[in-house]
Length: 232
Length: 49
Figure 1: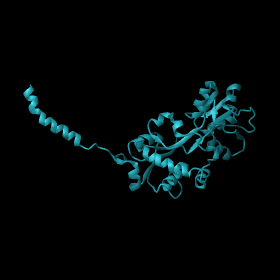
Figure 2: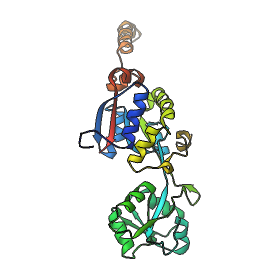
Figure 3: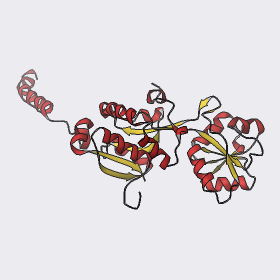
Figure 4: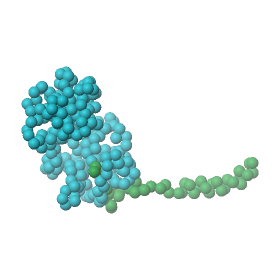
């Protein structure tokens, strides 16, 4: 929320723009915990979730997702100059290097899924503690999504870290997390209209301006459709 | 037994008709399609706090 009391963020701003294209407006904004977003939607307490929610088959069974508005690639943050030449998770696996990651994130799951040894995947509660482990030499790279990495690098007190070129696959599996708006399943007809309007909005100067204002780049454009992501 | 059931049948028919005619309770935006409510009431959005 900004100083004027307006809710800001890529999703909320894109939502309002697309609704405006449809001749509609937001009548109520509800802030809620992550775990309550889908239950509240299904209970009819609001009509749409605009929270950068990642599309996956499990959630597709619960809600009707719009087409995705972004696709976030994975990357690694390394000590300056990337001394071990770690550019992919596969490099970490082949070198027996140590990966730092925030607990509960997709990065932990991807590393273990690839076959990186459990003892070589160090979990931390947040980014600052993961970066501290890198500085102390207790980990060799920090696995994180690309927009977060750009933000972390930009805000470092000293320029002692680098991020590698973002990648879209880990071990042959997609490493791009797609975010979309979530609606109730019974509102699919509305979602179809919404998608039609959103197709006309994505790529416009207004769309690019919203994304750039929040640290997103053209690199975060979606690469899959909601049907592909839901496994339909 | 058959006589008792026969005497009950008209009442059962009335109850069945009443059940069929009772509107199903639907609350909030689920009562109507979002295509309709969005136009008249706007869209209610939730975001992550």
